[in-house]
Length: 213
Image (spheres, helix red, strand yellow):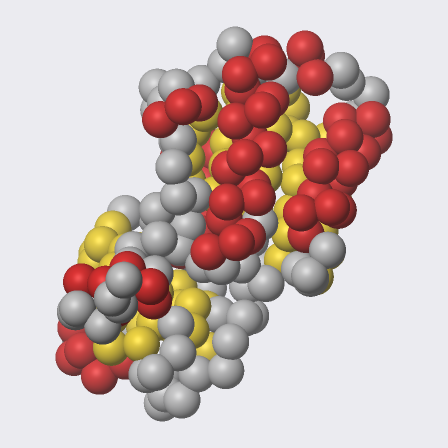
């Protein structure tokens, strides 16, 4: 079975074709301001490298957040186009869970994405990607309070983190996260939307009555 994977939510932009639990082709680049122009050709190239046509794709997986607001929308839009054209559902995945596929020594891993102003997008998983703390938008102080003192904890992030806990760089395992979600039913392309975990700055200002006509 051929699966298409797309991630544009974080520091890396990734497109990959996975066939029978093996990565058949992958392109991984640093994200940049040319994302909206560059990403579709990347997806087309991984299909070409895998010697597949779009019609050979059986399942489509996309990262729906959290992360860059613009980046998330680009990846989801491309996934929707393919899913709609191929009459396929989309399986949305979390960027935090993807980061948690990084091999580590210890009991728990904390995927961490800097959200500025001493806040982060974070979650806590064990070695099998079971959730210890649900993905959320959380202050660094509250996050540290939630870490169990009797477990070996490791952080994983592309960002610099001020913490006494070990911090490792992401080395994601796409096959691992796809296997975890192999039985997900997926969603209709029109129902696949960004999962930001927090409101945009404009929405926050509007809710607080800062924005006026």
